Image (cartoon, rainbow, N blue to C red; front, side, top):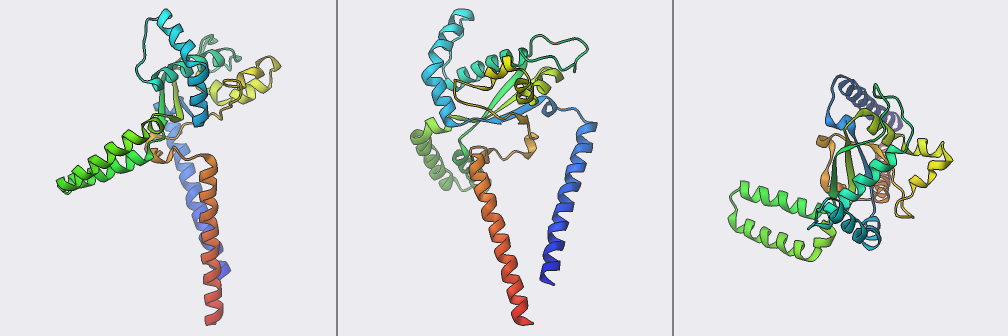
Length: 250
C-alpha cells in the first residue's frame, strides 16, 4: 500500500510538472517578450577577479582613447568589456539564416548582471515588512545591520555571478544558444570557447524575470545539486518511515 501511494505521489507531481511545461511552451509560442531574445550564464568570482588583474587596465585605457568614457564602478567596465567581447565572438560564427539577410555583426541590446548580494536582498525584504508594520525602531536597527554588512562585504556584493544578455535580433540569440555546437564544428573557431585563457561559460535560454529568485542566483550549480540531494534523501527517509509505521501497525 505504501509503495503504491509513493508511486502515485511521484507520478502525480510528474504529471503536474509536465502540464506546466506544456502550458509554458504554448504560452511562449503565442507571445513575444524580451525573454525570447535573452540568454543567461553563470560566471565564477575568479572570472571577475582575473579580468580585473589582467584585462581591466587595458580596456579602460582603450575606451578612454576610443570614446572618452571613464568608469566609476568596476562592474560597469566589466559589463561593457563582456558585451563587446561577446559581440565580436558571435559575429565570427556562421550565419544561421534567422533573418532575411545575412547578419555580419551581432549586436547586444542590454547586458545585465546579478550579484552575490542575496543577504542584502533578504535584509531589505525584512526592512519592508518592518515599514509595513510601522515598526520604526526595528527599521532603524535593520538599517544599521544593512549598513554594517555593506561596509564589510561590499566587494562580494558588487561581484557578478550571472550575466543576462538581450540581443537585437533572433540571429544573435540563436548563435549564442548554439555557440558550443558551432564552435566545435569548425576547428578554426575553437579558440573562442576560452575566456581569459582558462574559463568557459555555459549559455542557456534565460528564465522569465518573474521566475527568478534573485537572492538564489549566487549559489553555484554544485550547491544547488547538493541541496537537491538532501531533499531527495529526506523524501526517501520519510517514505521509509511511513512504510515501517504502516508495517508495524498492520
